[in-house]
Every structure is written in structure tokens, then in C-alpha cells.
Length: 463
Image 1 (cartoon, rainbow, N blue to C red):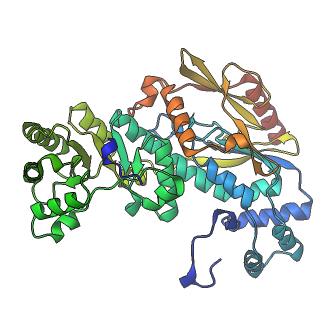
Image 2: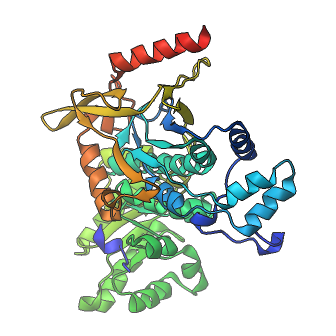
Image 3: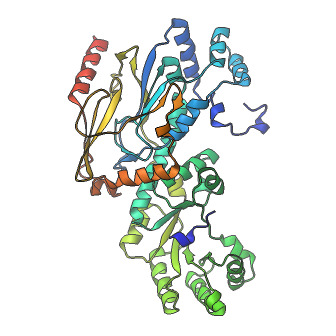
């Protein structure tokens, strides 16, 4: 629905501001710093592998859409401890001068292997793996989990809404109820990757180059002495606008749009009416009938108001003549499934595979690769194997950072990431792309060699 888019360390509690991503070295849990000092005292400085993965998919998700890698790479390239950071850590007590000096010199020098953003992933598949001296890989755990978790949750939710809309435009209306400014900004980017057409969030549009869209609020209508006066004034200033028609009575509002069209004649250019309450399906059908009878077939219908993928799917399935959807809170906070069982776990240290034997929390040891088997342009199943295995299928994980620097092939534009997501989602089986639970689930297996490696290490550590 293109016509609906208008392109275009604090010194005290009162002075706190959001720091740049590179200045977020202290966005970590205290136990990470304690472990870093312990590693230093014990001389443990060899390379480690940390794997980031989701243990199980939520019941309402057939797949997850990987997102957040760009933020992680940006952070790793720029992370530094400032003098103020060092003074604050010193004030906590328990940290030696030697350790504080090491923090001051901290730089990330490792590698990152990851699936590209916009790639569908499944349970126990690594979204990314960090290969670096153990202290470096340990310190970044909190931020890596935070950012990849948030953005993957939201991209995955948005992909469901886009699928439910079946080609109709979806606009992000959720910023005002999201959990803070960072979440709202990262959400707009994640939504766009997942196929959402535009966002109402102006600063996200500026930062990421996402198309921005906006209509009008009920307050504008209320501020005028009459609905007719509000429509006339707004359309005079913004001729191609969408007019909100449900402030008082939806169908009366549509009639007033028709009256405005008669008065303006050839100068009438209103692109759509917006329905924001009531039975959207029935109101859309009645509105369409009124507009068509008045010769306004080109005026589209845009719907909003408490929508999620289930309601969008219902409206589409019942034939509601709606051309686009504004989706807010339900998508903005992934209301039904706001959290994933995501983990960032040590899988190798000093060249030796490591794992956990905790009940329900398995870790696949070592560096890994995901092989996606395909037939006739469709994905048929994945195999998680050791990184040096040659197995059937397309390898998904790529080297995106070496020596602490992002590789050129990982410097993708947002439009390239969005196009990648569209292609990869389209390759999934039809029943996996739908929002109903997939029966059977998409198949993922662990290679025989990786299973044997896991069993051998488990025997060693438990013996």
C-alpha cells in the first residue's frame, strides 16, 4: 500500500544519557568481570569458542528469524573501557590494579562466525559463534545475548504478521508502547528486515533509512469543531493523506470523506481511509461499498487498532477489503512470546571441546556449521555438524569478523539484508511459513560425528 507511506557513565542520576554502542563496555553482568579477573590470575588466556543459540522454539513459532548481528559487530569493533568506567569498576572493590590496567587496554581481537541476519533458524542451531581469548569472549556475553535476543524475537514476530497479511502492506505503529527507546529503534530495523513496509518512528527512519509512514490521530479531529472541518483542513495541507474516520461514527466518517471528494472534484487526492476500532472486517466491507458507489474505487482502506498476526490472518481469510495494516503493541513487544530460551555457552577452550550435562540444557561442543538441505528451491531440513565437516546441504554460517574487524562481506545494506530474508523465508516449506503450528516441524538433526564428539566429552567430564 505505497500511498500510505510518507517517505521521507552518568555523573548523576539526572544527567544519564544513552551511550554510544562502543561505550557500552560496562553493559555486562558483574560476574563476568569477576571471572575475567580470575582468568587473569590463573593465566587462562587461550582461545575459546562461545556459541549463541536458542534451546527450543516457543510453541507458537515454527522458525526464528536471526537478527541483531549488525549491532554485535559494531559493538565488538568499538568497545572500549573509558577512564570513568575504570574508576567505577575500582569503586566496587575486589579488583586489582593489574586487572584494571588490563581492562583499560581491552580490545576485541577475535573472530565471529554467524548466520546472516534474516536467515530462518531453529532450535540448537548457532546464530553466531565467537572465537577469541576466553576473557574477550566472556565479557561480551551480556550485550550479545541482549541484542540478538531482542532483535530476533521481534523480527520473528514481524515475519508472522507479514505472512498473515499475504502481500498487503504492514506498517510499524508500536514505538510508544515498546520497552524503551533502544528497543523501539532496533525493532523498526528488525521489522523492516522481516518484511514490514514502513515505520511511524521518525528517528528510526533517519538512522536506518527505513520508509516512514503516518496518518493522523483522533486528537486532531477532536481539536476541530467538526469532523468535516478537520478533514478539509488536513487534506488541504496533505492532499495524498489517509483520513482517520472512526473518531465519532466510522461510516458517517466515510460519508464525510465522500462529501469532501464531491466538493473538491478533481483536486481530491486522499489516498485512503483508516479504520481503528470496531468490527474491522464488517466496517471495511461497508466502507468499501460506500466508496465504490461514490466512484472512489482508488481510495484504499487501511486498518489498525489492537492487531496481531491472528487477527490480520482472520481479516484476510474472511475477505475484508483492507489494503494495509498498522500493527502496534502486539508486534512491538512480541506480546504472545516475548522471550526465547537463548543461551551463550562455552563450547571449546584451549582446543578442547567443552559442554554441560545439566538436565535439559545440552551444549554441542566445539565450532559448528549448519547445513541446509534443499530440493527444488525449497529447504527440506538442516544438519548441525562440526565446522570442518562436509555434509549435504548449503553451509549457513559465514566468517563475518576476523582480528576484531568486520569483513567486507558482512557490511551489508539494510535493503540487502531484507532481500536475503525474503528469499530465505520463501524457501521454507509452506506449512512452516504459515502462522499455524507446523505439523510436522521442520527437521533438524545433529551429525553422527558431532554426536560422537559430544558423547566422548560427556564421558570424560563425568568420569
